[in-house]
Length: 340
Image (cartoon, rainbow, N blue to C red; front, side):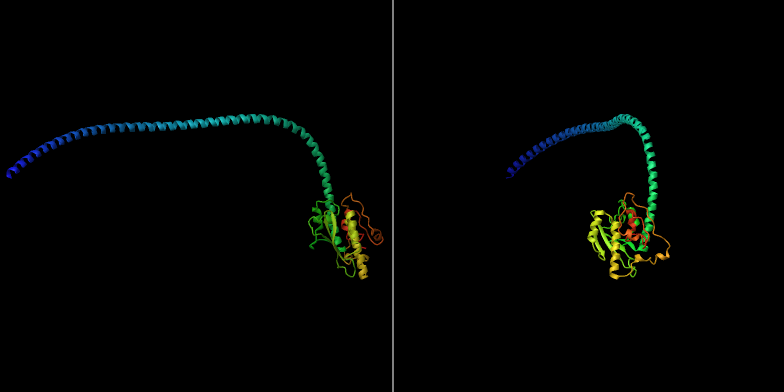
């Protein structure tokens, strides 16, 4: 057994030496490979560093080229903008010159026309000045006439008890409504009020009966579609429908108002059997030494209004003009603007 063990140990010792030699050879090979690899890595690293430096140089050069390119592009854009502006300015200047030339030609023609019109206008202005002077004179005349109308309205309201009120009972400023009315002078009492008072116009009379001078008699009319309509009559009078037919036929409002007052006087005389105010002087009138204002005709084209009671009043008192324009204010009396 000892011999066998020795032989095995000898074989084992020889195998170990061989293994050591192989390992040493491999180690030397590895070391040589590592040396070669180190040399290769060093060469590669050197090449990489050289390439990196070259790339950095190229990048810097490229950056400079890009900056130069941007500058060139900015310069080109600016140059194109300047060129476009100059072209636009040139085109605008060209159009302006053409337009100015056309305007100059037109102005030359207009100057010639204006010179011709100047002489014509001078003659027209001269004629207009003459017309204005005539209108100013007429305006002064109309203003005087309106003052007389206002005085007459005040007189009739005070001494004859004649008032014109709106449908709601508010007294109407006749003069202002008359001045503002766009209609002509025909029936100024009614046309001056109805356009702004669609509820109608109320004509009030008092001082008709001596025993009851404050008692009011009234008639309310409304103008609709160029036709007079009777809304109310207090007290009622006979033949009112016939009176309205005659009013719409003749358009003579003044005659209608005078006849209505006559009917009211007749009604008062029939009912009360007393004296009428028309037979005596009003108590207020005795203290004021004035006569009824005389009025100028409002429209010289209107015709004289026939008055049935005019002939009856000639022998009893004074009369006012019977023109339709003046009768607008004398309608308060039954045929005469004076006090009987």
